[in-house]
Image (tube, rainbow, N blue to C red; front, side):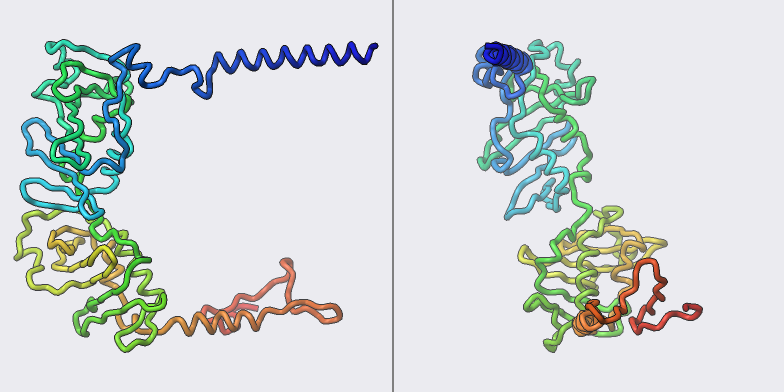
Length: 371
């Protein structure tokens, strides 16, 4: 009988615990079970609405117009984002593009700020101050047009007008931070941003200009010299990696040829990839900067230090077959490995014993002064 009472008491306590946990879940609603859907919210409050009802893959172009300035457009063409203005095209800054693609899809209104035109200036959505953002999704006409005003005091959202509507909404993200940069900030500073692993060919003109350029091709995962022998894999791979990461110092949109000295100069480096060719041409040096050009013929300034992977390149060593050295090293390492066995004295020393360092050449002799 006592056992039955104890069981009943345990069941009662368990039921009370379940009720309390259920009540807490309903109060906190961590899974959003009680949260109204977007449709229900819109019906309850028309000012809570989705402003950009599409995914990032649907966005094909973005046009930005600032008061008193010429419009410019970010546009996806053949898998690459380009920046155009006044008939000129540049490669886009992918980091800036990615922020648009991250923040615009599903952009919502979090409430109405005003619907009175005389209040537009307060939120900077009037013509003298608003920045117009047009979002295209594959059609000639924009899918959405936003007049973007100032950010709110938290800098987590911004005030916007949708199309020609009179309502000023508080957006769910600070879209002012997307459009507030200068034109050149949307241009890439890394015009050679290729994937080194996908390269199929590298042409190198010697920095000294005394020798003919060499073209290396990749075959069976190895870089080959023009005569089909293995090239210096490490040097070519490191060169490609460093050039792909180069960032320019300054745009030179109206270069003085007498100063830059790039006219008629053959490319210093050419990298072939599935998405095209990437060229780097080195011109004159001024103080601690070089003038250089890319595959599109655009001219930049780059610091001397950052161009060292090319200017200090040991051209003669590019044809050295380092695969044999790597294979020999691997084979030698396997031979030197000794496994201790029962009844056999092991040559492997414990961590507590002093081990003389080997020379850099790997000959096993300690440097002078070693034990």
